[in-house]
Image (cartoon, rainbow, N blue to C red; front, side, top):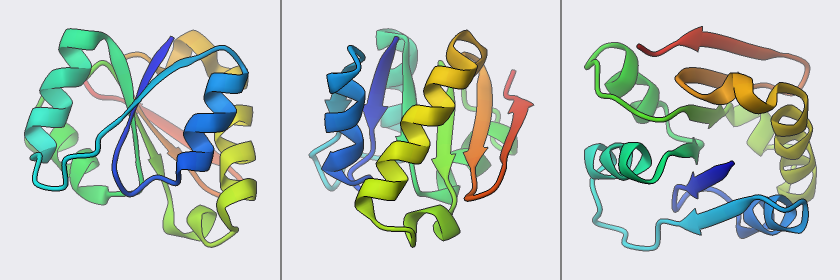
Length: 117
């Protein structure tokens, strides 16, 4: 499974994913549009990981396609880099193949999912 990490996601999340054998790519271009990132996720078959609600809005309301989207809720980001990274890897390993084609929202005490398609 491959992940495309938005610029607002801590590099620690990528490090933990890579250590567990997952391929990751970071979006480093600050001016790259959210729509372009979603397009890249489809081409690369990579799940986008972000803290940005705009991605969810583009996928659900705007019907933009994506291979999958993990949104880290603000309350989870407030836990700190290490705790956030551990929470993300926990969800990735629990849900695995259930991430494709879905919006997955990671909160401190729960995970919500819905189909994007």
